[in-house]
Length: 173
Image 1 (tube, rainbow, N blue to C red):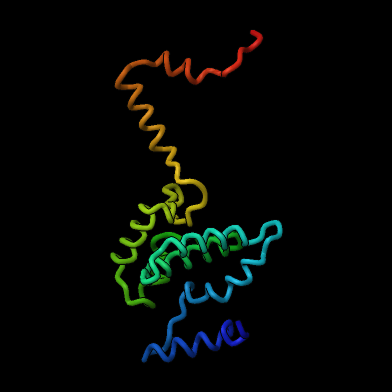
Image 2 (tube, rainbow, N blue to C red; image 1 turned 60 degrees about the vertical axis):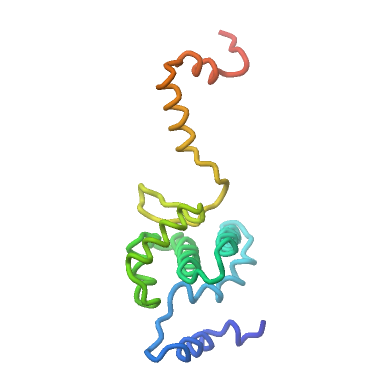
């Protein structure tokens, strides 16, 4: 890749050619300019781990899913910037960041967010009302706990569950 591929002015040129109005540059548009840097930032507190999560999520998306691609890139960059600022990838911020630039409605952005959460590509944190790129396993611990609790309630075998949870070795007392 030459310097021209990562030059900010080449981004402006590309945007100007594809639109008749003054181009809006989104957070997602900035992703390619930071991706190479993030991929080499492997030190303590570096962005490499988040870069891998962003890349893995993008690789799972269909290439023609423009809204999904933009949401993943935007959420990924916001999560990196959040370390230094107060910005969190809330639905309101994402709608603001993408709605005008992509000429999409609030409903479209919301529906895509829900679909990405359902596909386990994004994680929605209810307590902070923010979206994060899914990192880690696909194990849904909350569902497992609810299922186990429902089984205990249905069978009434509380003692059997307590025995199962007991430490595998004896205590001296």
